[in-house]
Image 1: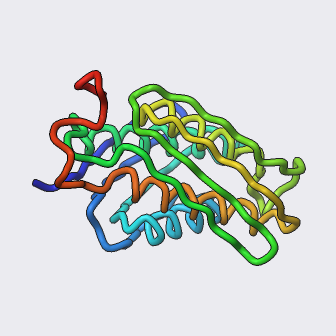
Image 2: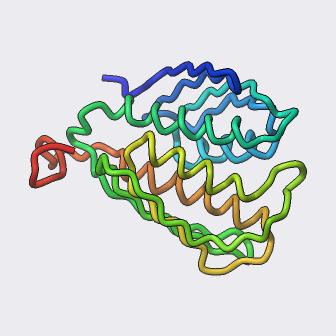
Amino acid sequence: MARSASIERITRETQIKLSLEIDGKGEAQVCTSVPFLDHMLDLFARHGLFNLKVEAHGDIDIDFHHTVEDIGIVLGSAFKEALGDKCGIRRYGQATVPMDETLASVATDLSGRPYLVYNVDLPKVKIGDFDVELVREFFQAFVNHCGANLHLNVMYGDNVHHIVEACFKAAARALDMATQMDSRIEGVMSTKGKL
């Protein structure tokens, strides 16, 4: 059975259409009107081996905040819907990714309980027109709507682009691990019998 979801979210600030296939090949078609976010979502799909389509329009004449946050909301919601009752998934995933001088690590638990630990020391700067403080907003929105516990730690790094890119790659790889099916698991990976 395909583990996929298609979600449309329309507010007065943003209009987003997103489709996700968890068991994909890393194919992405992304157009958010936020070029740096397009790049991050493209590599997120590639490194997580997720098929991802995103079309978003937002009030970017004000700033990118609403668009970035709402895409995090929709992507998290898509993962939650595509995973269904989570029967047979590994639940936990982790990945450490180097990007030149940077090293980032993500550990995640698809527990249904949202929590973000974000140890990423970024200066309040822009990459192109993108405010890097929006990276935290994206991941907070994602975990809230996915129901994931996600710990994102950057051990070291100097180049801001490298730091953010390593974070997205590590998150993708950790989620790929956590969402994988394991034939040894009966029901869900929990002594409670439910996630």
